[in-house]
Length: 71
Image 1 (cartoon, rainbow, N blue to C red):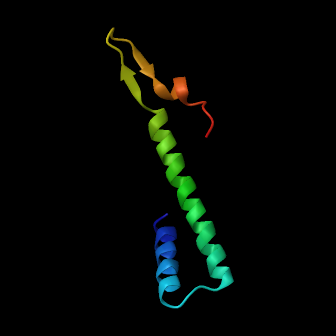
Image 2: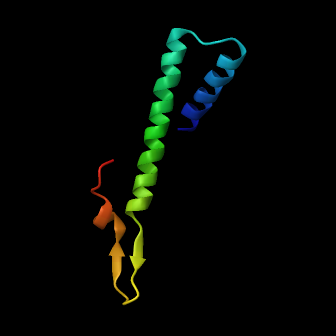
């Protein structure tokens, strides 16, 4: 993932200084979409692993309760 982020940044800086070719624009768009999908998947995993303790002492896994919601 670090290599993809570095490439996204390199393409951004190139777009600001000299512009991108059509192929580079497509690559930049694809890499950005992959990055966002990865961030969303990581966040979803973190949220699905949250467990809360109710006042009565029972534990409730929010991922099991709400994890099936539309993405």
